[in-house]
Length: 339
Image (cartoon, rainbow, N blue to C red; front, side, top):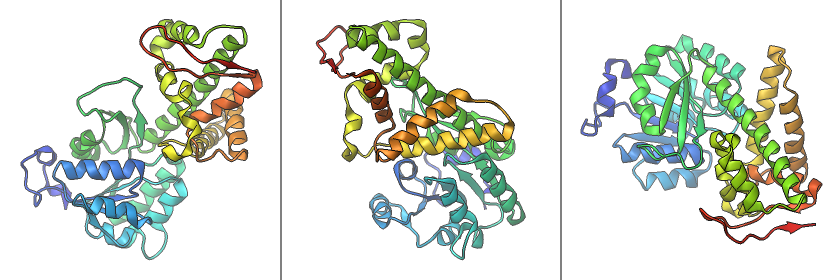
């Protein structure tokens, strides 16, 4: 198994597939599918499983090996990733039933969960896998700020945590998955960092929405507001500001056929997990709790599968304005609709 393989060899582009670890990905959606294709492009043998067979078929055409279940995949792969929508999905894939990962996983394997999970479930999985001789890392992804560039150009950062020896062993592979890899310490810390990041981002989104709607209601032009924000101290340090023309002013979120990567449903799940973590830690988080109310209202309106940016429409309704425009690097004409 992989403990006999030098980690530096895994990164070598000319290393034979025989000497490289076999990689398995459970969940071939937005994150898992992209990573499977990425690993294939770097010459790895990749086994995939997804309940949606067409997602496996697309990867099979690129050279991946489809499997019939989580157990089938675990019997063949050395390093196994889960990239699934919810914590319950991860529990089912790893621990529950005759087709789960633990039925066939081999001692010495490494399991990495890249799902935005619950810290409690991460700890539960880690403890459950120990008797099988399996090491675990949690390594969820963060999107990088709009406009960020790096060697990989993937627009992602990995927040990894777990045994530092295991992390060092798989770090070369993690570096293939993202532009930045951050080691966060003990198991569960990567997930905690991801939940904190998403909660802060969601609160900031609502604060920006309120400020822009206030400006529009007072007769300011959208371009002027945006320029003032991006050139000020807040804009210089907040990626959300630089993404506004793409994610909000363009109204891209009004079209669910765009298949958004990050939906209201997913962000609401993350916010609820953040609130749960705060309650268990006895930490007051009033702004996060208030932000959740807007996302729950969006869910009630049937917006769950729209891009998370659509939640801004609630503030537009309250202020009776609409932020819409096509932006360039300089001043440009914009359609500002005020009701």
